[in-house]
Length: 173
Image 1 (cartoon, rainbow, N blue to C red):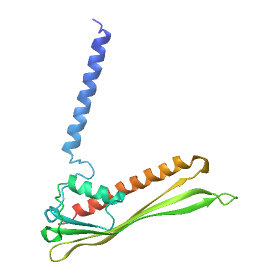
Image 2 (cartoon, one colour; image 1 turned 90 degrees about the vertical axis):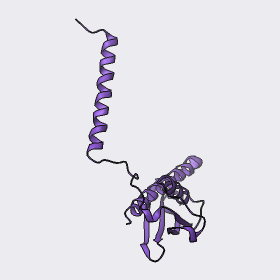
Image 3 (cartoon, rainbow, N blue to C red; image 1 turned 180 degrees about the vertical axis):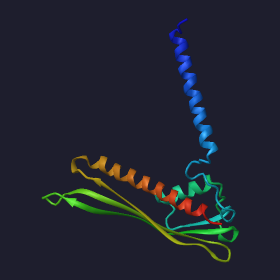
Image 4 (cartoon, rainbow, N blue to C red; image 1 turned 135 degrees about the vertical axis):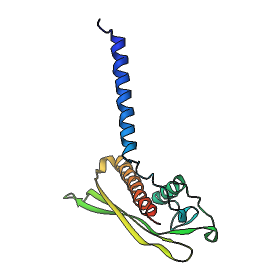
């Protein structure tokens, strides 16, 4: 007896669902976890976050990720279990190449962050400087699009820097 097309579609759909479920079970069984899903150590349960500028891409994303990881940010340093101090949060743009008319054709964005963690009586994490660089082409006739591209690159670098910082924070004991 031959299957009709509806039965075949149902069979294929059920097989795909079963395969996806099996893959999820296999990943869970081997200890796989999504990046950034490590819990923060107890000393960072109620941190005070000292930011050089609270409105940068890094600062906003860092605060968001700390809260998402379960940290209850404190308004006063005296009420905190530890202090996270971001002492450098800097984006620099450098010209990589120019045309014969001295018009830039390629830029490099570098995002650098320095942070440290201090407990009640000792330094828990020495100052850590992390930096990422990306380059992008530039065309004068599509200025707005290229400025938007630079903004997107800066935001992505900030997210990547926060991921690196969060991994370092979760390694504290």
